[in-house]
Length: 144
Image 1 (tube, rainbow, N blue to C red):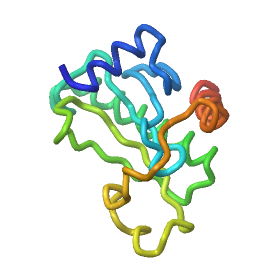
Image 2 (cartoon, rainbow, N blue to C red; image 1 turned 180 degrees about the vertical axis):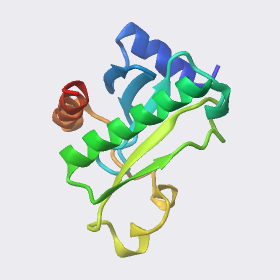
Image 3 (cartoon, one colour; image 1 turned 90 degrees about the horizontal axis):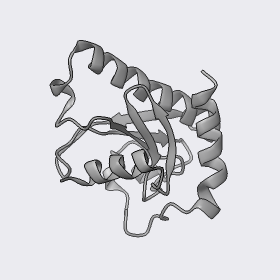
Image 4 (cartoon, helix red, strand yellow; image 1 turned 30 degrees about the vertical axis):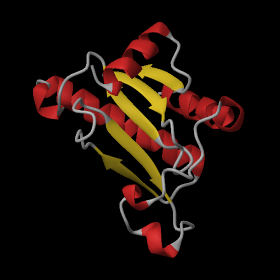
């Protein structure tokens, strides 16, 4: 069982600490490590190994939901753009990273993939610190 499976289980139970909301294709959570503030993930429910395991309608819904999360994160964070990544290398289950990027990032990191950041020193998700942002992302997604 992957971390993605465990995250989806905790979302279904309503116990995931950074749960944002349910979408037609799955669950939105904020990243455990907020390497950039507003970093979210889309987790499919049910969990599948990769995007190609979904039928055409499932793919379309997952990608539409991913873009809707990006719209919300863009709107509430003031980011300049959103990066989307689906890797599946460490956790071989479909999940999409939705990452706000900004021109205020350090020059040496601004144009590089987010994986170049030092994730060990980035802040962990905290309801006290990130709860208001989570609520704003949720409200933006749910208004549609």
